[in-house]
Image (cartoon, rainbow, N blue to C red; front, side):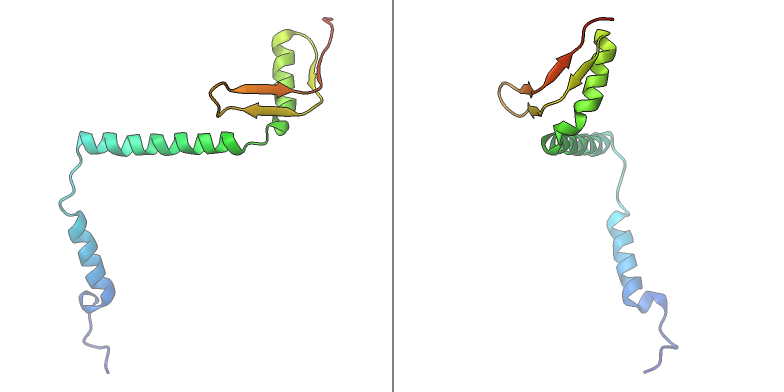
Length: 105
């Protein structure tokens, strides 16, 4: 069997390439399509953010939350205990164990 007479258009890759190009040849940009695509991207980001918040280890956030609270209150704020956060309930709540708030300086 000789490969001399075979061109790209005769190969499997050439046939696949022609089919892919034919599938997208009549594709047009429409505002409705852009809104649908943009909405899909926004929903994907929201779903990723919700999944991240659900699986986030909130105890790793004790330091940054304490520094933020210290800066806002003008006092030393520390969280020495566990930080439990339930966001996905009818009434989301936060439980803080070992909260220390220092006297104003």
